[in-house]
Length: 247
Image (cartoon, rainbow, N blue to C red):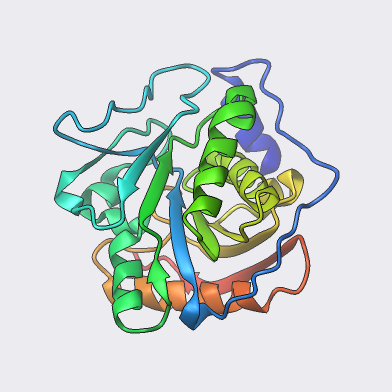
């Protein structure tokens, strides 16, 4: 599988080389799930319509490394998606499949998590030349995470290269002193980039949370992955949950 995704990327970026790292950063997650302020980051290319955000430049051959910031109370009717490397049909039906902000708000209302951080973030994860991401945008979001007092940054990976991007973001945020947890479906990429913590599910690219409209499944998955992430005791832990796509 690993070689297949690399060859696919090289069809448009012949010099692409996946990032490899030699150490795994680690910040201990100290506040229990029920008291934690959770911040959300997606690599799904989500942005605000009506001229409130500039759409991501999804047609750039090497990717758009910038990010978009959202108030946590944003209405999903105001969202759009610009990501040319995933199947957008799932998010167009239900943005929670890759940007589960509504589900996190419901978990906070139910008392399962402490709160949702005041701002959420989106990147367009297909970035094959990540130097601007490493040097500028990832540290900027990491700083914002720490400044708003997030206890955990939940990062949703939505496609193959997105897993590398998610790992870069997780490492930057972790180095800023905020624990992270990546949700994805590609173990080999997350291991190569040396992500601090991750949870795997058997869902397609473009819908990491599972089937659109299945709020119960989304909430159950979020509860399970947060409990699993809380149990991790050291860097580099990647475990799978038994959630499967129901087609």
